Length: 306
Ligand code: PSU
Ligand code: MN
Image 1 (cartoon, rainbow, N blue to C red):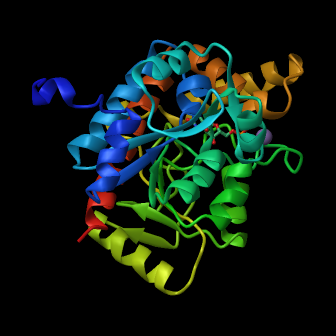
Image 2 (image 1 turned 45 degrees about the horizontal axis):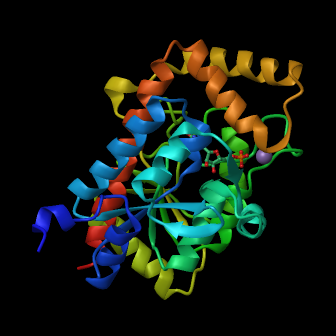
């Protein structure tokens, strides 16, 4: 018989997720679009490793969601993960694209919206991401499907706010309209994704995973079926000054307009362009905040078990 360690599943494999489910362990969903579209290699690999390790260190099991050759999957086998990190032939899948990706037997990396849909399918209650999509600047013609899925999916989502490329006041207003509670974790201000503050006040602040768990139970006991957004500022030592982010964002938006980028391609284009314009500073912040959010989600998932 093989040794125990030789039979232990790879930490991100579907077998590891299955084992966690069997023993009723804490689990945290992770999206795959940030790996296949949001971050360029080699940073996407670092993001995957750091997020999974952070969830595991908190005592929970990371569950990467994706469509793998047409199969909606919770966890990725190591060779599938490699294909997603290589970003070859992996489409960006939002909620509306799930069925089509399955029918096409495609590889699909799930956005926040699609990951929320997968959480419903897989009974997952906690999900960590970097920044949600929202109302784009010069809206109303581009608004992320993340917002409507947050409105109708009961999942706790940890993030560093909405991506800095967006219209943040408008995004916060839409979340209010949609009935999605936005809770500052250790802050009373909406974080700016790469930056700690935005000057936008929040109406709720909670300072521990246990307090989040209590608020979540009350939200659910009241029959609310929306998500709860837990916004967590990026670690201060990795945050990028607001002026630098803003200058890069304005330049990236102009480059996107000049290149005629439209629809689902807008977000990946802007994220890659800003990475280049900030000489990698935004990437270091992005990696640090992804890890930070994954750790918090793991702690919340564990707190929900007691
Ligand atoms: N935030 C990041 N990196 C990302 C994304 C968000 O820091 O890659 C992805 C998420 O998957 C999010 C998606 O759901 O971008 C939003 O895309 P759109 O604006 O097209 O809805
Ligand atoms: Mn869009």
